[in-house]
Each structure stands twice: as C-alpha cells, then as structure tokens.
Image 1 (cartoon, rainbow, N blue to C red):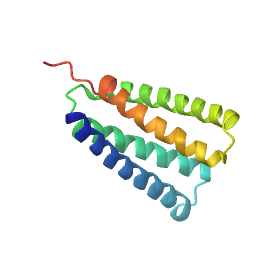
Image 2 (image 1 turned 45 degrees about the vertical axis):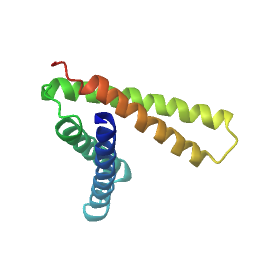
Image 3 (image 1 turned 90 degrees about the vertical axis):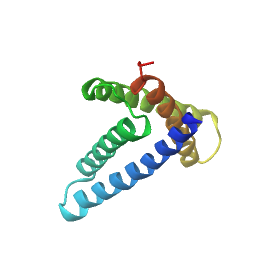
Image 4 (image 1 turned 30 degrees about the vertical axis):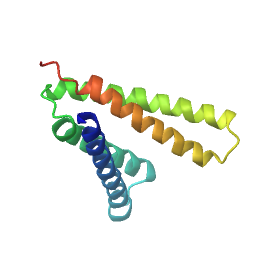
Length: 128
C-alpha cells in the first residue's frame, strides 16, 4: 500500500514538474528573450530541482542527507535518461509506427524505472 501511495505522489510531483518546466521555458523565451537552448536547459533544471525537493521531502520522506541524496538523484536521472534513450532508439529501429509514439513509450519506461530507482536507491531508508 505504501508503494502505491508513493507512486501516486510521484505522479503528482511529475505533473508539477512538467508545469514548472513549461512555465520557466515560456518565461525565459517570451519575457526575457533567451534562446530555445538556454530556456530549455533552465526549464529542465527547475523541473529537476522541484522533483528532487518534493520527492525527497514528500513522496519518499527521506532522512538521507541533502548532498548524498542529490548526488544519487542526479545519477539516477542520468541512468534513467540514457536507458529511455536506448529504448527509444531500439523502438525507432524495430517498431514500424510513428516515432512520436515511441517517445511516449520511452517516456513511460523512464517514469517507471525512475520511480523504482528513486524508491530503492536514491531515497532508500536505511533505518529499521
């Protein structure tokens, strides 16, 4: 039951991350006139920071130190991103459907793997 509750919270945090990312990109581009690349990177950094803070404090209620959990969170992000990219490339090569749908499949894969790795690695509680 706890894992289901955490998965629901993780999903809510993800919706918030998406909104924050989109808003920051819009503000950077439309209000401040930054390039697509700078706006995109800034938006994703804002979303990742939001994700880290909310998942550490609310979703998983981790008592692990901020620095060690941030390093683990970053590592998990990179690993999961590379895994989803591999899935995407594999699907694009072997699945004869519109590549956009392969992105959606890879995103779903990323979400599940990222949740599992954050639950059992990044924010794992070592206390009994």
